[in-house]
Length: 347
Image (cartoon, rainbow, N blue to C red):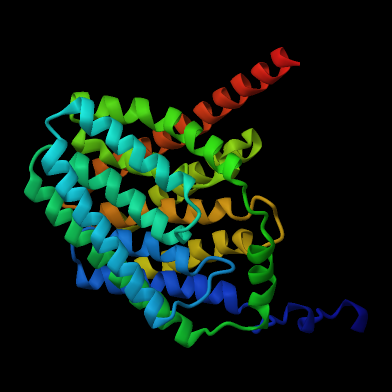
């Protein structure tokens, strides 16, 4: 009989090893709670962008790094506003300069990844939202800087509650040992990105699709990761973002039935632990689930911050994000085939 007794000790949790996961999940939930309660414009971006500071291998920023980051972002957003107001009416100048700026951002390795990500969002969002009005672009610039400030401030508070521990050493080591690309590799990759972005940017400029700029923004975010150049990773990305979208739909439908702030936070915690389990695992595709969780937060945040049209907007967001993911993966695959066929013909 004693052999059949359940061994409760096997269910013990090593809390020290769980610190990175707890920091990521509880931290993201904390940011969602604060940004939702303050309810400022584009508040849902704070949680999405804050995930980068809580991801595996992330370190807490120093005061100097935080101030420097905000200063760089402020300068970039100001330049984006000035650029849009000065050249927007001249397509033959506006589009080449925009593409050259993006080419440099994808090529350079002098900027930290989060600075590069915020810069890409600013340079893509501000000029195209300025199509309707320069004042809108300037306002979005201020909101983006404020979102960056909130993301930095809140994530650093999380690091005070969950400081770096021995469990983080594995992820820090993996990040430090990640192979760095050569100048030639970065240039080839940046040119490929321009082949992907150029058609979308030209179409958005010609038809002034400022209302669906989320697609363009998400395309820019997705292409930051060189891992997407692999077709296998691309397929996993489609599955992961589809999963994030489905969880977003599920969470929204549950909130429609039981609209409650506490219930929303419990959903964020539950889904956060589901994705974090894979993100902080040894799987080589683990990082993709961080993207899926950001997709979930983006959809949930954008629709819960909306008005009575939230029901239709949740599907709009999911369709737009799905279009961006499929487009990026498909074009990467096409470019990969073209480059392989060229190399074979040369041989």
